[in-house]
Amino acid sequence: MDGVDLNVDAGAIYGFLGPNGAGKSTTVRMLCTLLRPTAGQAAVGGYDVVDDPGEVRIRIGVALQEAALDERQTGREILDLQARLYGLSAPDRAASIARAVDLADIGDAMEDRVKTYSGGMKRRLDLAASLIHGPEVLFLDEPTTGLDPVSRAQVWDEVRRLNGELGVTVFLTTQYLEEADALADRVAIIDGGRIVEEGSPTELKRAVGADVIVVDLPSEAIAPAAAVAETVPEVDAVTQGRRGITIATADGAATVGTVAVALSSAGLHPQSLTVRTPSLDDVFLLATGYRMSAVDSTGGGGGAAATGSDPQHAGRVPASPRSGPP
Amino acid sequence: MSVQSGAPAVAGGGMVRPVGILTDIATVARRSVRSLLREPEAMAPALIIPTFFFLVNIGALESFVERSPGIDYRAFQIPVAIIFAVTGISRASVLVIDIQTGYLDRMLVTPVRRTTLLLGMMVADIVLAISLSLVVIAMGFVAGVRFETGLLGILVFLGLAVAWSLSFTGFPYTVALRTGNPAAVNSSFLIFFPFAFLTPAYLPRELMTGWMQTVAAWNPVTYLLEGMRSLLSGGWDVVAIGKGAAAIGGLGLVTFVMAFRSLARRVATG
Image (cartoon, rainbow over all chains, first blue to last red; front, side, top):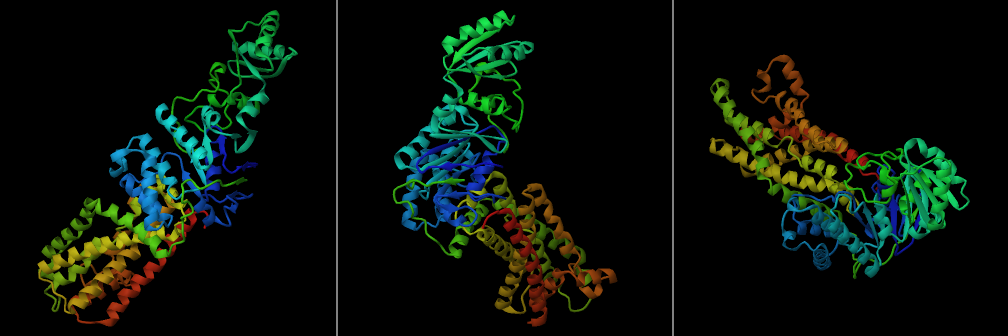
């Protein structure tokens, strides 16, 4: 971790977006008092994580990756243990557990051992456990990694509700652009342990340009095509990928024709030309030179080149769950 | 970097209160004892091994050893059976799973005192050590063994066995915390062998060969066995009991320093 400087406002949903190995979990572990920063400062709720870890701990709820639960206990026992670890008195404990049972919404399974639960049920229990003491800040480390789309949508709804109705500040890490875009008020894009862009998703995408033109090309034509595209006055920026170039421009519909003509007169023939609005992946591409969606989801590809990049599918959610910690 | 806090997530937030260390220990112990009770099968080896050795040792050696005057070999073997039962038991296998699954982290982000995460598990170790010792003592009674020091002697005997068991748990906990590796924790039981066998487990020290006598003199288990045996067949021998207690204390000091330093290393911040 180096040069991560950020400020999260109270009541916000803050998205921390980056590929595997970018340093997301390390940042969260420092903010949650699990890892001591070797240099620099970090404060949560006004308390320094190194000097006042106890004050930080009572103010935060944490749901780390992979729903860390003891499989040999029942859901209710986990909630009870969690309430006791926070020192809740017996009446407070009963009330908190009742609320958490409602929140987890897993029905009679609450009385079963956790080892019988599905992935989605574990996440819901994990989230409920992390909220048992009424934290002011909730840390969610990749809350939907490995979940099916239905469970993912449920977690999103829950995060929005916690933030909207109860005003909990949410610090969320994700490797899914779509997730950061859908949930976060502000997004920091992290790569190789550094924040490379920071702002609201709208601001960040606007900075790329109003539109993006994606040009699919044979590999030998990519570099010449980029040179040609840069000569078109309406073009703001050109980025080369493995399967083509991505052009940022203020008006895609007006510019796409000019680009097509310029390429054609240079003897270059694109396989396809597509105009679309920018995604956070375009922001990522512009900042880092490679596409986040192209990084192998099972590898820690922090600095990987844009292998397998597909400009047409920028911004998609990787289909396969990540495995292993970064 | 900083993260500002918003409103508490549930009405009535801010209920969190400081609690005493005993409450923290009780919280962790509650879970550990519960998981212990859910896996009674895990107790099986800890009972089969001492029973097996008790029967085999008596079958093989009783008539031979009892040629020496003044030795009741069944009483002589009961402390050995207890040592075999309680040495090396611990919740370290659970701790290492907690480390691997991240459940330890889940507990570490709460305000619970770091040391109680180990102390609470040790409560379950004590419960298990008492249970195993009572079973072995009952086995001794069935075999006709009696305590010359009476009921109080039985309680001191039990106390020594449990204290020994606890002092030994520092080894597996240290391995669990240092490595986070279940295989390493499983291998840590190997340390049991020199402790258990380089001792007067089979014969009194004066009947052992020279080098073995020397090694046994440096083994804390030697003094533990002799202290425990004195309660069975020697009457109250305060010196023997005191040496046994000192041996436990010495080993416990070493293993607990190792274990709690390993815990401190694993939990990065206070």
